[in-house]
Length: 250
Figure 1 (cartoon, rainbow, N blue to C red):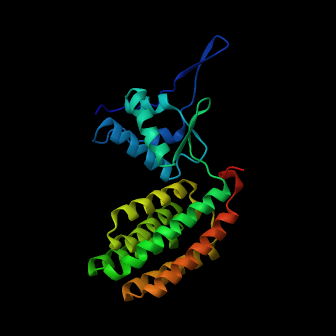
Figure 2 (spheres, rainbow, N blue to C red):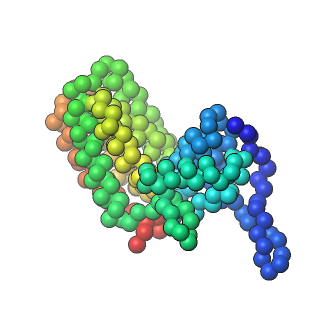
């Protein structure tokens, strides 16, 4: 795969007979253009990555030509990748406005958390009975990493390791399709980076839920695990209610 030019060249834009350089969105330069893999795979993975990381925020436009230029590619694989991301509800497209990172209303976001809870509850109920010692090790490691990120005030790490912990608790169910749906639902909420807007008190309460869930998982106590998970999602709905409106559609 060709390596993209490292110089940050801006495409020319004509205004009243004059030529000027249109700035390329900052998040475009975060796309790793020199990774191995097919052009389609790399473009898709990189676009998904910057969206889930919150680097390309909900509602921001995605310029096909800028992305193609970053990868030294034609617009065709970029559009193919964007079609896939539309199917994952991470990108929206309108004929006149083009492509944008998907943006939700507050009601839609609350609904996605309801879906996430239903899927995670089903996964946890099966996982806690099927878990092995190896699963315990991964859950403990994920919880430790999350605790460290929270203690350091690392908002990005908070999202990364919270996801890792919830998946570590759920994966022992060994239900591939269920886990795929759960991850897809999680991805839809991730671009908003909701934990970046949570105060210390709520962060503490949410992480206390994590501690209770981890202890119940290790004890193979399904009742306590599911009860703590339910409380956790009630708190997350409170978070949704207080998110800044600027990140959401009216």
